Structure formats: C-alpha cells, structure tokens
Image (cartoon, rainbow, N blue to C red; front, side, top):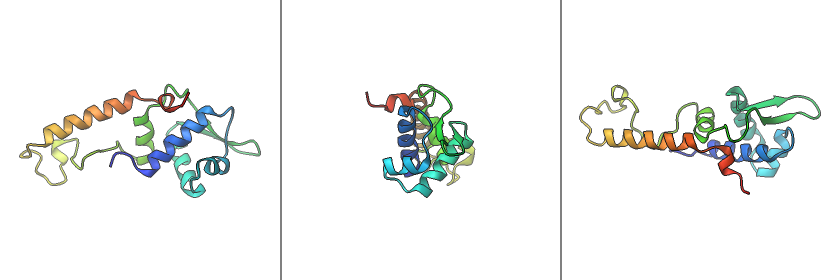
Length: 134
C-alpha cells in the first residue's frame, strides 16, 4: 500500500498551499479540494507536527509551507502522514523483523527489499514542486 488517501490528500493540499499567496484556512482548502474538513484537519495537523507546514491563528490564520516547495520531498510528506515509510510490500526492511519470520529462507526478500529501497530513493528525489502544474 504505497499511496493511501491520506497521502494523496496531503500532497494535493501542499500543491494548493504552494501556489497560494499566503496562509489558507482548512475550511477553504477542504472546499477547494472537496475533502472532508475533519479528515483534512488531521492531515494538516500531522504536516504541522512534522515541520512541513506552519499554522497561524486568528482571522487571517491558516496554513502555509515552512520550506520552499522544491525542498519538500514526496517521501517526507508520506512518512509524516503515515507515521512510517510507505511500503509497497508487506515485507520488512529488516531481515530480523520479518512478520512471517521467514526472511532468512525467503528467496524474494532480497529482491523486494532492494526494490523498496529504489522506490524510497525515487520518492525522495521528487518534490512538491514536481507536482505543480505549470
């Protein structure tokens, strides 16, 4: 499960915020993206806790990017929202923590682990800027 709905909504929100001229509140953002405000609020809070967004209170409050959109990677966003690195496979990244306790005899584990590493590396090279339509 590489891309959950939470990751998708986080990325969509960050693209909109990257294009915005100032802070944007969660109500406006949820309407623009047609996303449940309560679900979006949880995502925005997670992004704020992980120092991807900053929040402002008050009448002109809202959320905005802390860093430039060229500096925020897709992997960073997905890890912040999911609470862990996004995994394509159920296999563990460590041979010692295999959920089935069979990594040492599994002929697929080395391949899947290497593939997961390449996917993580790729997601770490893509940024929010790469998602912005020109």
